Length: 329
Image (cartoon, rainbow, N blue to C red; front, side, top):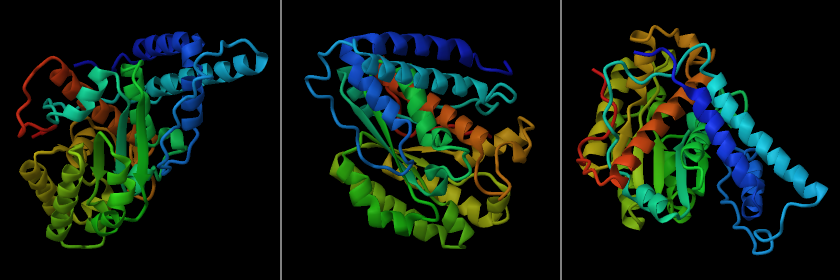
């Protein structure tokens, strides 16, 4: 097994393609939108406005316009470069025992095939908002957005960060309608359960609320849904019994509602127990939240699953509903 993924060639090809697109007049407004989006507050939930007709027909000619385009190109290069740089010392590898796809993502796949915009909502608490990351660029939703845009350079992909620190299912349910359903997403990545474990809440009550929330999302338009369970970290491991129940119940909810689940706890445990990565290499000093490397590898593996699942659907491969995700044993 290779110890390092070939990120740099991929990132360079993505940068080259992005640079060529940005230099074309038809892509000027897209470059500006992406440059602006890269600096937005993580929890912002406003979609980028579509380009006006005048923006898409005016050639890049003035010094001011060339400056905007150059800055956008530099931003694309910087994001692509950082995606490889962060894994230069410690590679981001999937669980050693292999993986399975998270299952069908028909809405995302259909939109990509049709060339239509794709909207993904990252819904959750502080590890979705990005607490512990050195900057908003390094939280997992922004990392995921950058990866998907590199892989689908001609696609219009928006990842909305709807993470609010300290929340769990009861608080999230109060904003499910306005920050998730009303956005009409093609995919919802719902990170949940950690704060319930830390508060000693009944895992069964959390599971019921999550199942109710999934039911509302599916009834509203059937967006693809992927659950993300608690993180493997010292603070969570201190409540091992509760964490274990939470993880099992979220898995059962995913199975019953035919949605995907990304087992973050098992993936992070594999980093430490099977790949011999020190916990402090992916968790900050509070013993709970991930650092830049942790968020980056989480986003990378999640993005790999999304890309693999979409690819299977585009190729006409029938993915069983009960085959959803990594199951390292």
